[in-house]
Image 1 (cartoon, rainbow, N blue to C red):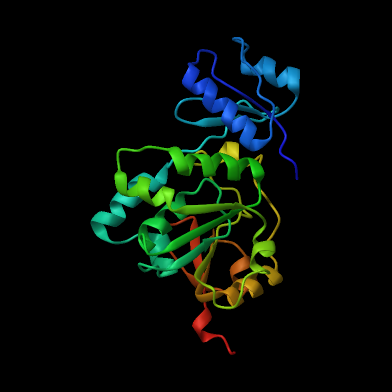
Image 2 (cartoon, rainbow, N blue to C red):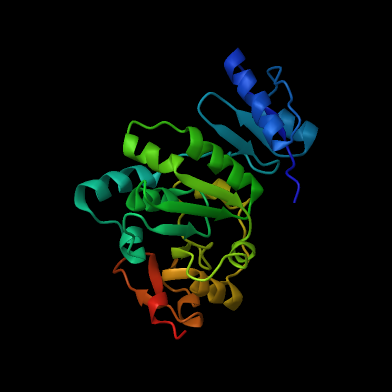
Length: 266
């Protein structure tokens, strides 16, 4: 799918931001449009496409039919990372059984909070590959992971180590050899509505809602050496449908399901 949209700057900008916006437009293959103090509403009406606003510290994507923009921010990853470093526990890291040096695939990147925690856990010797079907989401998050500067250096370092690929997870899995990564993690859009948090609402209009399939899980258990992990709503039928062993979390809106790949019959 060819990316559609235009790139512009905030209403008041600088030469540095102008140069950055022109670079982004060139890299993404999109036209650059000078702002000329026009409001976003007018740009959306004029061009009827996604408006990418490049500023000093982030890129915002304005969908033509939404007012709230999509942009990258560590969100929950920040306090989760600090908690993990202090206490040595995080629901995702524990469910995946992540260790230093592990190779992990986050097959449903989204805004990347879980990928950041995974990168913290596997460290410099490990590797996190993040797959995202939506071109808009993958570009926004990839740029954010590469450039966002927080006051917490270990999280910054973890962001920079993540490799983001714009592709469908089945497409990627089919090309990979057996047992080539340690853990594959899925966090698909929930089948049941929950209260949005961490900037998820703007994400929804760009997100992929295709369901997980038996082929995806079969390929994941072939490619993963240790575990395949599914995060899903506590009422989800996908745990049973794909034979995940569920780790139930009292009072939580979501659980983790695990397939131990070491237990496969070769």
